Image 1: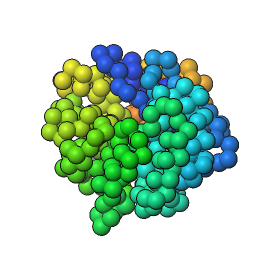
Image 2 (image 1 turned 135 degrees about the vertical axis):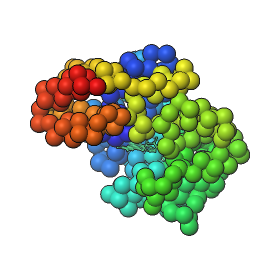
Image 3 (image 1 turned 180 degrees about the vertical axis):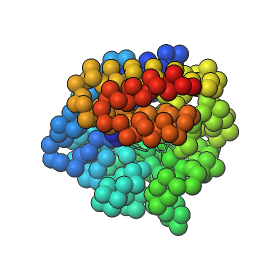
Image 4 (image 1 turned 180 degrees about the horizontal axis):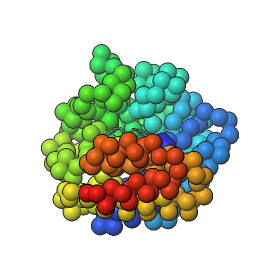
Length: 301
Ligand SMILES: Cc1cc2nc3c(=O)[nH]c(=O)nc-3n(C[C@H](O)[C@H](O)[C@H](O)COP(=O)(O)O)c2cc1C
């Protein structure tokens, strides 16, 4: 997830997933500028040895730029490259990138062929079901992906127009998974070990991709590995925030960015506790204030 799952966040999740490491994908990397390794991308392509095999995700709509960037991430040590055909943000989708590619399947095909022709490592695709409910193209996308030699397809079971509204359509994901020759990873609304395990059992998917739930429950991967759902205590949550702050600092993040990241995590992590506390954390002005507020909640719960 862009703006969330960068290197320090993944280090944080790895520490909490001792039993079994998740398979990580980078934040998506823009291919919009002629220079691929912009300062933003240069930070985002970093990964630890322990994350291998690591997947780097690209977005864009220009076949030449995408294949040039694919070559670069291959040289940087990515084990897999994934093309994003799912992002619904208007500034991306309306320009024909992300889920905008689902409105221009000939261009999607050209991009997949072009990326495939330069890559030695496997190419993956991540997409939604279609642009809107009147233009569901997931069947065509599967056929195209298989024809182009894509080796894994992750499907977020919503349309672009849905954004994040409603529920992900797991039946649609399951129908595709049942006929696919390549592994299908299902995505959308998985927020517990139980849901993850049921999805794999009931929908023929090879695995699940988890996004937002990792902020509310950073222990989710360990819980899936152990098929258990443990109630998170205030003390667990507080210790996790303290640790995340150390990892952010160790990655030379500026104070303002650390505040943003700690609020991003805290806002979801503390949903289990009091709403008053959530507001207090979100209104904090310094890192110290955020951490003190967490200390206070441990005292009161
Ligand atoms: C803040 C944010 C950033 C995201 N960035 C990306 C991204 O860079 N690449 C991607 O494939 N999906 C991205 N997504 C979408 C998620 O990976 C996932 O497909 C979507 O949230 C549905 O899954 P979930 O219900 O498990 O969150 C992002 C989602 C959010 C909320």
